[in-house]
View (tube, helix red, strand yellow):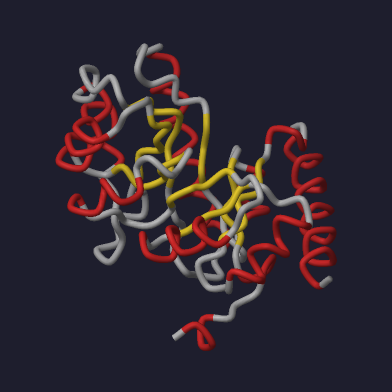
Length: 229
């Protein structure tokens, strides 16, 4: 199975990145981003031992959850519209895209249990990217202290689409520095011990800079998006 071969290669690269960073490979979780592949390919990912799955649209998430009976840990990794919170909030274990107070308010209103959330941060300050500014992270997290249905377990970002490793590394390092700052505050509602950063083209750099969740799609499960349209 191609996914098995891809996973073996990626795990080797993750292991090497952990060695370079003096980290344990057990600290790094692979989220298989299945948004661009079929239900069949997603099931193959589960059969390969990938139990963390990431989707970025409510429709895609719900369709796969209804069709796939195998146990999985579901991550919602895309921007979530406030009006669609009620569609997904009871079916996911992790939300990687908390980026505004109105979204937090809707989660608080709809959730029946505590949701583990990553605050999405636009470290690179690109206009096309979602996420709050780095300078606003602490005040945003402090504003959530009465949202008892939300637990901020970490921060999430996406690096610029560039081949410049120094630029990519600086973005990931900036998020790591902020994660440490928030964790040191010891907010009861925001342990902030995790970092969701790194995708198919930059996950090794992300791990070297402290990522605990890497979101890997094309390099791991491929891309069937043209067949899905």
